[in-house]
Image 1 (tube, rainbow, N blue to C red):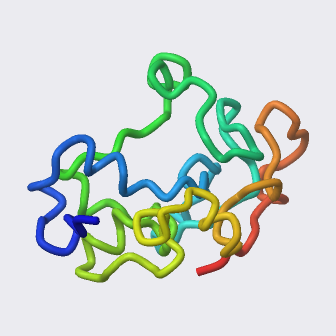
Image 2 (spheres, one colour):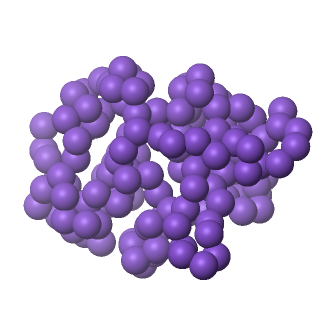
Length: 144
């Protein structure tokens, strides 16, 4: 296996390499709240309506931007703004000069390893279509 992430910067990666960094945790698809005073982000257990809450994959990945107006694409020029991503996210880790965690699918060869490690949102979130009440009531602390 070529550990391309160890000898390439995020900017040098091919689109395929870039996409393969996603560990499939689904946590980027959870609604987050930002404290306007501190800039701190709070994760909720409320998922985008397109997220399959078991597989942690988008149900319509190719069309997600036209289906969900606030869906964000990750681009290398946005690296300084990756603070909203989970602290375990490969994009954020590599941008900070750190390596991938031992459970990352690129290291294990197993896409289930992120779920086995307890890092993913698998079966621990609900679709935004099922939420009633205040989203603030859904703030949770996720594994770091």
